[in-house]
Length: 262
Image (cartoon, rainbow, N blue to C red; front, side, top):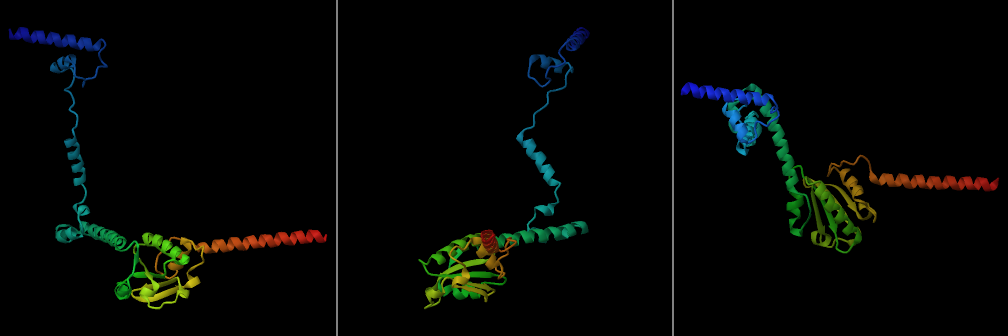
């Protein structure tokens, strides 16, 4: 009986092999069919592949992440605590990595520090200006509500405050900050570094009524209060254009005069 069963199984297997050779080479071995189940039971096609699930994919990703040096996932405090566990090669890499993380942290802290045109109250002058802190630039705009040039400057300074959050931009109503401050001196911009005045712009020195934000940015950059990415004075472009236009008009007038004389 056993021999008879084995012979039958062998015969079935031979028949299946002959069937495959006669035209079933293109069947999908992973397809769920009774035919494929029969082929698998006789070892004619390999077992069905198991699809990867999400858990397996996550495990593979964790394995890849484990290849990363452990200090690359540490904060500054963690690096300090674990510094005795690394060899010389790691220590050199750690020092470079520590400096990189420290620079990133300092840059982030500078960005968090300011970033807006804040209103200065009269009793805060000493705290906000005189004791602003080490390495801090302060740009203070004295203004009065209703003066068009003051309104324009507040607009531009608000934009620059967002662009240069490492510098402190402030505004204050003039006669509240400095009692009896004359309107004829408005607008006024004071620039301080570590509590000491480094520059001032009074009245028209702040700019013309058509002042552009880039022109004010250039002016403040020349005091050192901000580090601009402008490569040249944007106002100079306008001056050069006007000069060129005047020269062209003069040349054209000269040519017309010469033509009339002839």
